[in-house]
Amino acid sequence: MDSPIRVKSEVGKLRRVLLHRPGQELENLMPQYLSRQLFEDIPYLVHAREEHDQFAATLRSCGVEVCYLLDLVAEAVSSPDVQTRLVEDFIAEIGLSARGVEMRVREYLLGQTVPQMLSSMVRGVRKSDLGSREPVHLVDYIDDAYPFFVDPMPNLYFYARPVLHGGWRSVYLQHGKHRARAGNALRAISLYASPALQNTPMLHARTDPFSIEGGDVLVLSPEVVAVGISQRTDPHAVEALARRLICEETGIIKVLAIDIPKTRSYMHLDTVMTMVDVDKFTIHPSILPAVRTFSLTKQGGTLVIEQEKRKLAESLADALHVEKVTMIHCGGASAIDAAREQWNDGTNTLAVAPGEVIAFSRNYVTNGILRDNGVIVHEIPSAELSRGRGGPRCMSMPLWRE
Image (cartoon, rainbow, N blue to C red):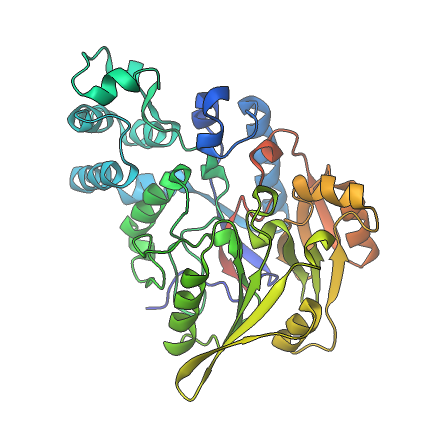
């Protein structure tokens, strides 16, 4: 049976996508712990949900079937045995903030209905949810001010830091770099609990020793994948993934490893570059002087790594077998506009078809330049969603592209 994940392109007609609608996990963000959760600000949940609903409505208007993560999980864990296994694996993966509370957290979660249980996993478990507890261990005295036994997962609405990505009948699970990516445990376990996805093999597991995140992986074509070497993705992981993709007969014959500056604002490749058409990319111009590109291919049964001596656009054109690739600069010629709009994910677009993308309305300079280059742009509001530092591609996990 074929894998239900069918993604062989960044720009093919999008038919099915997986999202997570923001929930109470955003209400559990606290100013003093924002860096722990990789946030700079606290989105207002009511408006964030309205904006996310507009995102989903725009996808549907483009002919895309929208699936929601927690709905999928609820279907997959209908039996008590599977629910218990999910909770056990979840507790083992996340690492609780205090010792000796595993049993209490387990009982708290399993004592709820399935929707309530999943919601609690995502929003986090406050110490007050479990009632008073006398300090037992030294950490209870030292870290008693921290109000959670289970951290909230505010990053979960950025669903394409995907646990799955593929289409060549293979898939990888991301191994997230930061503890705030604990939601990967829930996503991985829940998706693999689903009968619809059990036939999807892994090429990179969350247990692998080096980190890789889905925002660094662009599926350029059925033969070529680009992977960013970034703040979140380790070169060891890129090489290991390339070896598996290229040497295990997946159909991929080349991996372009793109080394970008290691800063928070450039956390993933898709925050500085996304594909918008078969021969067009958005790009943050500030990275171009620093970016390095490496070609990983198989020669004589061996993985060969070569540093590209050409410009990035030329390497992309060669990999895609097109005469020329157009690099559309975020913010145009203005360094100020480029910096502002890249920070608000002007380069992070989601293609719903070749030359047709969804983008944040606030990035009006870049959106205008995209239109000048023949790209159809569907704008969505983002005053609250953008506070989490992620755009439309970050917020979606394509399941099926033509």
